[in-house]
Length: 121
Image (cartoon, rainbow, N blue to C red; front, side):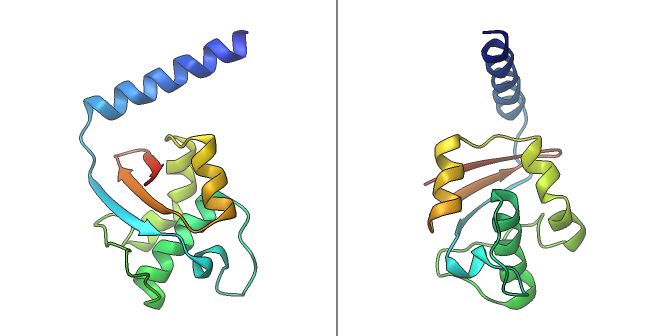
């Protein structure tokens, strides 16, 4: 019960932070099969790694899906390296995590100063 209350409190705090602060940038991206593998051909097993690979594919390798949009934050390699931290501090639903790990969803990402919010469209 305590864990559920703590989780609810954390979610409320993130929601409050996100609604009080404007995103630095936002973008949509299709997480296709190419985003589920790193440049060595190894399958990625975390949501953050897949989203990060999508941004590397977009900016470094030019492997863009038709629905991929650019953003002003993850164009920078140092910021892409911090994507895991931003997602750990951010918000994503369990169903969105499953969709990303097991499929090719269209996602929407709002980037804030210290965290990201990821939703499946």
